[in-house]
Amino acid sequence: MTLDSDQVERAKHDRLARFYRVLRYLAAHPEGATVDAVAGFVAMSRRTVYRDLRALEGEIGIPLWSEDGKWGIVEGAFLPPLRLTLDEAVAFFLAARLMAQFADRYDPDTGAAFQKLAEILPPAVARHLERTVDVLASRPLDDGLTRHLRLLSRAWAARRVVELTYDAATYSPGRPPRRSRVHPYLLEASATTRALYLIGFDESRGAVRTFKLQRILELSLAPETFDAADSTVVQDDLGRAWGVITDQEEVEVELRFAPSVASLVTETTWHPTERVTRDADGSVIWRARVPGTIEIKRWILGWGADVEVLGPAELRDEVAATYRKAAERY
Image (cartoon, helix red, strand yellow):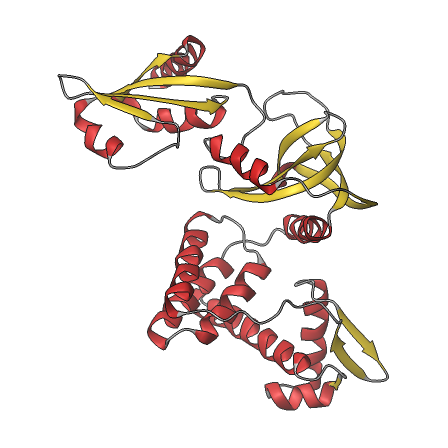
């Protein structure tokens, strides 16, 4: 029998909810619990509970222990309970909605976190959040990305050096992967590229670099730790970026927007360094200083014929060349 899409989504949701009930029972019994006791609590068979316990370890990455017929959660595996006001919980709900819009892969940890959040929300809001979890759960899994994200989360929290193999061929075709030892300073998400990034000190380059998680081919924890970076400096550097790239030379970008989009441009602050002026014809001159032009170029191209690059000259030439190639295709 083939399940329809609604049945598949319900099955995924039920599985996540069951995982949460199993973990809640184990958390309430730090001395450990038998499979029979867990099965009675979640109203499932012993076989299902065994399968769920293995999945919690293998798929979700929850550290469990098993001894003398009992199962339990390794001490320190969970953070203390988080007490939220309704307004704070709604802020997390909005974050979940953004994840649903931009995530192209399903992350089980994200789904579990939002499932827990739904438990404390009023029913009217919780129903929407549960639907959001269903949407996320319908996306394909990327076991490698999930594994790397979990490992980097632990390295970031414990200030452990990581060793990675990185595919740098995107901007340099034919370039072989390179090995690096990196101090994880920050994990960052980008709505522009729908991707996750590691920002950290690259020992081989002697400088802070940005690594896209989807391009990390191999990753492992090194035994060494590193001194914590100045979070103010890291955040200040990130605040200068257009997205997540902070390791490029800073340039002054100058654009002219057509009168037809002037209101759209000026109603949003696109960058903290931007300066905006209006010309007599209603057009807008927009200026900002950003690290490199890789990320802002994508934004500029999104405005089509309603924007003209005035500077720098190299960026103007790149955008013009892109439009010429596009015109040739049409």
